[in-house]
Figure 1 (spheres, one colour):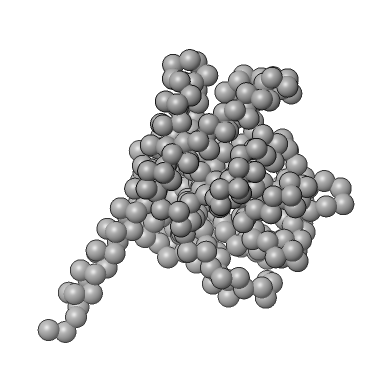
Figure 2 (cartoon, one colour):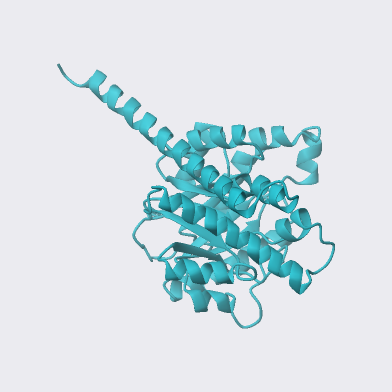
Length: 322
């Protein structure tokens, strides 16, 4: 691994709206490239999400570690405004709309990374250790090159790791994706992290699909910091579609050393934007709901931390000499 040891990031609570396909295909129902008017509608929705984030800040959300993750296609105006307002900014490195990491010819990041100089440069990878090895090797090589470039330019690396099931894995579980998430995915995440690290991929922060067991979070955190990587941490993605699942995962991850926050997207903004698109909410109402959802996630995380601190303090008092 690299000898570079930047200071650990203590907290990171990102409102993530770097997705593009969700806006183009799911929200607007597009089957092809957006027209200029449709692209402008997506930019407006992303600006609305940022408005919800700013509302949360104005209502007393702590600034330490709070920030946004946006893309370089529809999120440029938001990124520019965030920098002007001193908001922590993370931006996606890769070219737009690619299934695999594609950093373009002759460069390791898009020009927007140089232009905006975000606090974190983000990349996304789909990596299942039991997938085709040629594909995994290609993805690892590209991410290792990105690691080298970011380290050479003094930039922090935020890697979003997705571990989708292979067809064989799903068939072995009777097609039950919930069983895959619970029984197979946690160990595959650890294996994927280990293989990527061995291939020269060195993120400062791992963005990971949510895990709902303490022991799984512990194993993942240990792998993130294996081999002298004490500065490396993990944050949780909103893998579950409902608030009940998300709440459980936030409560499990928050007390684990090595987990420092989250990067939450669709759970926070999908329903408000869908209602706006269907003219069931005004723009102001949609922004308020996004604000409320972001505050709710922060409250859940902080409550889990406080509960853990109280339990730890009680245990210490029990074992203290009288």
